[in-house]
Image (cartoon, rainbow, N blue to C red; front, side, top):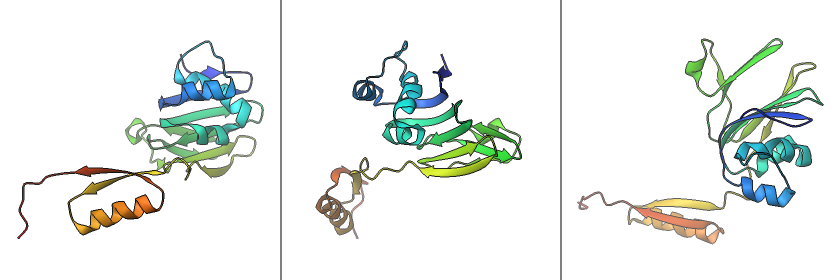
Length: 171
Protein backbone atom coordinates (compact mmCIF):
# COMPACT_ATOMS: atom_id res chain seq x y z
CA UNK A 1 0.00 0.00 0.00
CA UNK A 2 2.99 2.34 0.24
CA UNK A 3 3.69 5.11 -0.42
CA UNK A 4 1.02 6.98 1.53
CA UNK A 5 0.21 10.32 -0.05
CA UNK A 6 -1.88 13.38 0.64
CA UNK A 7 -1.95 16.80 -1.05
CA UNK A 8 1.41 17.73 0.45
CA UNK A 9 3.39 14.67 1.60
CA UNK A 10 4.59 11.37 0.15
CA UNK A 11 5.72 8.94 2.86
CA UNK A 12 7.26 5.47 3.01
CA UNK A 13 8.01 3.68 6.25
CA UNK A 14 9.88 0.61 7.41
CA UNK A 15 8.99 -0.64 10.88
CA UNK A 16 6.10 -0.33 13.29
CA UNK A 17 4.37 2.73 14.70
CA UNK A 18 2.97 1.43 17.97
CA UNK A 19 1.01 4.56 18.94
CA UNK A 20 -0.82 5.14 15.63
CA UNK A 21 -4.25 4.57 17.20
CA UNK A 22 -3.57 7.14 19.93
CA UNK A 23 -2.33 9.68 17.35
CA UNK A 24 -5.45 9.09 15.21
CA UNK A 25 -7.62 10.00 18.22
CA UNK A 26 -5.48 12.90 19.45
CA UNK A 27 -5.34 14.63 16.06
CA UNK A 28 -8.66 13.36 14.65
CA UNK A 29 -6.89 11.65 11.73
CA UNK A 30 -9.16 9.65 9.44
CA UNK A 31 -7.64 7.51 6.67
CA UNK A 32 -8.88 4.95 4.18
CA UNK A 33 -6.42 2.40 5.58
CA UNK A 34 -5.85 1.06 9.09
CA UNK A 35 -2.15 0.51 8.33
CA UNK A 36 -0.03 2.41 10.87
CA UNK A 37 1.87 4.33 8.15
CA UNK A 38 -1.36 5.80 6.77
CA UNK A 39 -1.49 8.42 9.55
CA UNK A 40 1.86 9.99 8.66
CA UNK A 41 0.94 12.36 5.79
CA UNK A 42 -1.96 13.79 7.81
CA UNK A 43 0.05 13.97 11.03
CA UNK A 44 2.84 15.84 9.23
CA UNK A 45 0.26 18.24 7.73
CA UNK A 46 -1.05 19.04 11.21
CA UNK A 47 2.15 19.31 13.32
CA UNK A 48 5.01 19.39 10.80
CA UNK A 49 7.40 16.63 9.82
CA UNK A 50 10.02 16.93 12.57
CA UNK A 51 7.45 17.48 15.33
CA UNK A 52 5.40 14.59 13.97
CA UNK A 53 8.43 12.30 13.98
CA UNK A 54 9.06 13.16 17.62
CA UNK A 55 5.55 11.98 18.51
CA UNK A 56 6.05 8.50 17.06
CA UNK A 57 6.63 5.44 19.21
CA UNK A 58 7.79 2.11 17.90
CA UNK A 59 10.61 1.12 15.58
CA UNK A 60 10.94 3.03 12.35
CA UNK A 61 12.86 4.49 9.47
CA UNK A 62 10.84 6.96 7.40
CA UNK A 63 11.34 8.77 4.11
CA UNK A 64 9.11 11.78 3.44
CA UNK A 65 8.89 14.19 0.53
CA UNK A 66 7.22 17.57 1.08
CA UNK A 67 5.81 18.50 -2.36
CA UNK A 68 4.95 22.04 -1.28
CA UNK A 69 8.39 22.99 0.07
CA UNK A 70 10.41 20.63 -2.18
CA UNK A 71 12.15 19.18 0.87
CA UNK A 72 13.06 15.54 1.52
CA UNK A 73 13.28 14.07 5.03
CA UNK A 74 14.88 10.80 6.14
CA UNK A 75 14.52 9.74 9.77
CA UNK A 76 15.06 6.80 12.04
CA UNK A 77 14.94 5.86 15.66
CA UNK A 78 16.77 2.53 15.99
CA UNK A 79 15.78 0.90 12.68
CA UNK A 80 18.86 1.15 10.39
CA UNK A 81 19.02 3.72 7.60
CA UNK A 82 22.08 4.31 5.40
CA UNK A 83 22.54 7.13 2.91
CA UNK A 84 24.73 9.02 0.51
CA UNK A 85 24.23 12.58 -0.73
CA UNK A 86 26.33 13.65 -3.68
CA UNK A 87 25.93 16.70 -5.94
CA UNK A 88 22.24 16.73 -6.91
CA UNK A 89 21.37 13.14 -6.00
CA UNK A 90 20.96 10.94 -2.94
CA UNK A 91 20.29 7.33 -2.02
CA UNK A 92 18.75 5.84 1.15
CA UNK A 93 18.69 2.12 1.99
CA UNK A 94 17.98 0.08 5.11
CA UNK A 95 21.12 -2.03 4.72
CA UNK A 96 24.63 -1.22 3.43
CA UNK A 97 24.51 -4.48 1.45
CA UNK A 98 21.76 -3.01 -0.74
CA UNK A 99 24.24 -0.61 -2.38
CA UNK A 100 27.55 -0.95 -4.19
CA UNK A 101 28.59 2.47 -2.85
CA UNK A 102 30.04 3.33 0.55
CA UNK A 103 27.23 4.83 2.61
CA UNK A 104 26.92 6.75 5.87
CA UNK A 105 24.70 5.47 8.64
CA UNK A 106 22.10 7.94 9.86
CA UNK A 107 22.55 8.21 13.65
CA UNK A 108 19.77 6.82 15.87
CA UNK A 109 16.93 9.18 16.73
CA UNK A 110 17.82 11.66 14.02
CA UNK A 111 16.36 13.20 10.89
CA UNK A 112 18.21 14.63 7.92
CA UNK A 113 16.42 17.32 5.91
CA UNK A 114 17.46 17.98 2.30
CA UNK A 115 16.29 21.15 0.57
CA UNK A 116 16.00 19.95 -3.03
CA UNK A 117 16.16 23.50 -4.40
CA UNK A 118 19.80 23.91 -3.35
CA UNK A 119 20.75 20.49 -1.84
CA UNK A 120 21.51 22.07 1.53
CA UNK A 121 21.11 19.69 4.44
CA UNK A 122 20.28 20.10 8.10
CA UNK A 123 19.86 17.54 10.85
CA UNK A 124 17.32 17.31 13.65
CA UNK A 125 17.43 15.31 16.86
CA UNK A 126 14.37 13.16 17.52
CA UNK A 127 15.51 12.36 21.05
CA UNK A 128 12.84 13.04 23.63
CA UNK A 129 13.79 13.02 27.29
CA UNK A 130 10.09 12.92 28.20
CA UNK A 131 9.63 9.48 26.66
CA UNK A 132 12.78 8.00 28.11
CA UNK A 133 11.87 7.75 31.78
CA UNK A 134 12.19 3.95 31.91
CA UNK A 135 15.33 2.04 32.68
CA UNK A 136 16.15 -1.66 32.94
CA UNK A 137 18.89 -2.57 35.41
CA UNK A 138 20.57 -5.95 35.11
CA UNK A 139 21.18 -7.13 38.65
CA UNK A 140 23.95 -9.37 39.83
CA UNK A 141 23.08 -9.08 43.54
CA UNK A 142 26.09 -6.84 44.01
CA UNK A 143 26.40 -3.28 45.27
CA UNK A 144 26.85 -1.74 41.79
CA UNK A 145 23.52 -2.83 40.35
CA UNK A 146 21.68 -2.12 43.61
CA UNK A 147 23.13 1.40 43.77
CA UNK A 148 22.35 1.99 40.07
CA UNK A 149 18.72 0.90 40.52
CA UNK A 150 18.32 3.13 43.60
CA UNK A 151 19.88 6.12 41.83
CA UNK A 152 17.55 5.86 38.83
CA UNK A 153 14.52 5.41 41.10
CA UNK A 154 15.61 8.50 43.07
CA UNK A 155 15.91 10.48 39.80
CA UNK A 156 12.29 9.67 38.93
CA UNK A 157 12.75 6.80 36.50
CA UNK A 158 10.46 3.78 36.27
CA UNK A 159 13.01 1.08 37.13
CA UNK A 160 12.72 -2.51 35.95
CA UNK A 161 15.05 -5.19 37.29
CA UNK A 162 16.26 -8.35 35.67
CA UNK A 163 18.43 -10.91 37.42
CA UNK A 164 20.51 -13.64 35.82
CA UNK A 165 21.79 -16.62 37.75
CA UNK A 166 25.17 -17.66 36.42
CA UNK A 167 25.55 -20.75 38.60
CA UNK A 168 28.84 -19.56 40.03
CA UNK A 169 29.81 -19.17 43.64
CA UNK A 170 31.91 -16.20 44.73
CA UNK A 171 35.51 -17.05 45.63
